[in-house]
Image: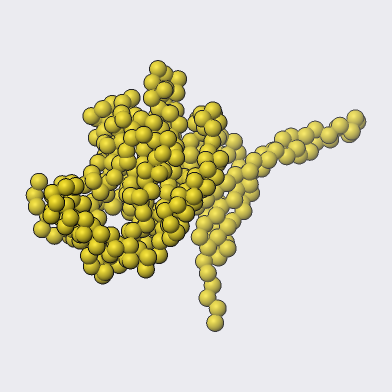
Length: 397
């Protein structure tokens, strides 16, 4: 590999599209291992925390409490390449693609089958989005192999997010104290030849560096992690107290959150219903495909629908431009064809409108038999369209 002469510039040039990053890493895994071999741990506890919050101290406790025997996966330990080390020393995070690839490859190790703790992922907005995509992939894999011999290899995925938090003052104090303790320990090891040397982090010996490291966490990682609250079990732990106090908080929070988990039978019952993000992700691509098929295979009807929209609907919509909503009733026989209605919905969607249709059947008198008094009815269809779009604000003096 080439040497990174300007880490910050390299990071700026990295692709920041989570979908592209995740797909590139996932497709590589599928090419190397085949989908039926993508067997990830059943339970994953994604551990993050402010510098000095005690992640290293609490990791073993968390593993014992959740009966996890292998791990943890410490992301910083995975980043051992010279380029990664150079970026870390400069206080810059390693690229998302490299981090994601390293983490996923490590988690495929069979020893983590029952579960593990992942220390230090996700840390960026891109990594947060990649984590969401990973969860969706694991759900999809379980659904795919549910009725096959591989079912047991794809258990219901359990993701827990745990964040240990301390404020800036406490974080800086603990980092500097750790640096002093590490340096003292290493002096004794070097003098006696007994024991192992500990890593001396550059940020643990300079208050300004420690403060920058904390702010990187608070403004980057912590803000990004908030986006996961609505999706995964999220454990926010105040780590200001003693080790024992923090452990009590961890136990209390994880027991509560465990009570919110769906049972495996319930989870499997719901597996056939796609989650909203899966639908939205492919919606635009599917829309374009349908519109192209209308133009190619239903040219006459497609032209009639677009012309009808332009001549009958748009004048009304334009009149309601301020409110951003138009209600349009139609009895036109054009819409008796379900395909015409689908075309109308797709055309409006492509143009940025949100449209709904309410179809009502009305019995209307056609004629009366004067001798018997019997009224003959005919059934008409009334199509009620609601078209919504971004309205216009009126400036007032």
